[in-house]
Amino acid sequence: LMSAPIIFKIVVIALLVVILISLAGGMVFLVRDKGQGDRAAKSLTLRIVLSIILVILLLAGYRAGWIRPHGMMPAPVENIAPEKENDT
Image (cartoon, rainbow, N blue to C red; front, side):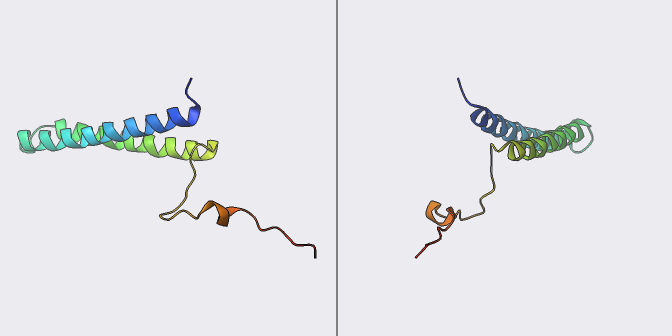
């Protein structure tokens, strides 16, 4: 059985893929309809809703401890550990 953090990451990646598909679909609708139809607007609306859901999921995952920020260059593990005091 998969753990919650793994399932969470799979859901986030799947949501990103669906957002990209919606982006591509909106572009196709915009070109085919020459800006006259409402399919491109619906695709944009769907993409915005999915993006908001993604942000909420990311915040919830951070709050649950399933993801954590690390910056562009995460520090090596030995630099993260607290320093020990010497009693000499």
